[in-house]
Image (cartoon, rainbow, N blue to C red; front, side, top):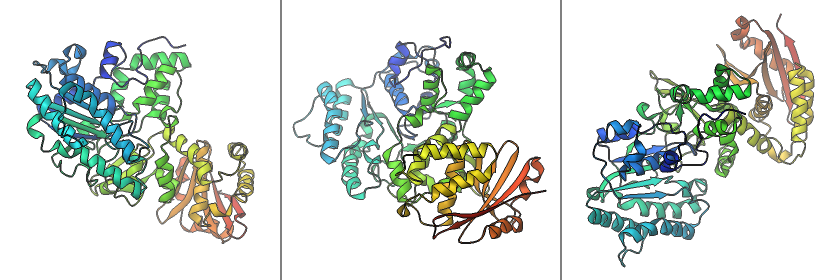
Length: 522
């Protein structure tokens, strides 16, 4: 059992509870200093679920309420001298899920009532927008200080129906109505902070609030949520050492494991390296490295969108694109890329300034393995009860370097896939191969570029590199010949490994692998 270095705030998102309970707190108050020094008034921040948005919102609330005692020893304590107590209206919309229009109106009613008990309510304030307008004005009048409005998870009510236009529109109108007074309330507001998963602009929810500072993609705010590599290796170094000792690992080995599982997020062009805070804290508390974030629930909208837009999973490993392709509203998207990025299933891996090109990819092992485990049945064969048995046999064959046996397993399995689940395209079978090999935690890249073309799949094993070419209704010889003609093997000649090329033929009539040819380069 690991020695106790810190108490970890598992499931705690309230700043005061963390500070008063002496839990581990990674100091993010320097960002509040930044807001105040720049006299920022309206700030929007987009980050994936369970990434610390609510904790930061709670930190802002405590600051604007003037709770000086909670901030002793933190960055803002050296900056703030006055600690003015502002009236704070904090609306947590994270619970506004799976509602119809009436349910959402009731939820907003429950959010407004506590503040109306505090500041009063006029009889003619019937709708959420009128009630919010009246609350801010009365709070200012009664306290003599401008109000602060914090809206956490503004888009929670919309995400589960983002793919359903008929259900989305009435909910969107309700939320738009609720937020509409914010701009005209400017004389009465000290600060407004809004968080969510999806981008707000073009969504028209905040169409009137055109002075919002969207800080989501700015380098200087890349570590405002989450835990940066620097924070982990300085403030949490004793925690890593204790965890490593309990697991029989050195500090370096434990850090490498944590990095592989939870690191890899980048939220700007020159972003700091960011770890998933939810998974990291859970792992530290449990003394076990496991998939906590993904295991906490894959949103239903993700599977629906992957289905709707026919996402080719193999392309998620590395996708070159421009900012406008993923930094757009989910309401206007024409593919799944914006939501996959904004939800944290893809992240920025590289930025090429000359062409203003971004490379998006899966952040880390936790997300990658979670996606595979969730989507294999969805993509391959949800009607079979023995998927795991097949995968086990397939895995054993691959790890023995017995590709003949692995392909035989694959042939038998594919033949059982119901007709209505497949489209007989080369892409379809390529996706199945990608899923199978990726499930093994083998480093596999699909459609790998060579000088004059793309290999369908490249599988890296400790001592062998396999290059696959797949053909539908063409011979395995033709597939093998293409590997040679296009020079798919050339990039790997200098790696000092055994090189094996594999041509595979699919028969669309038989709906399975008809033949394959395996040839080792001499």
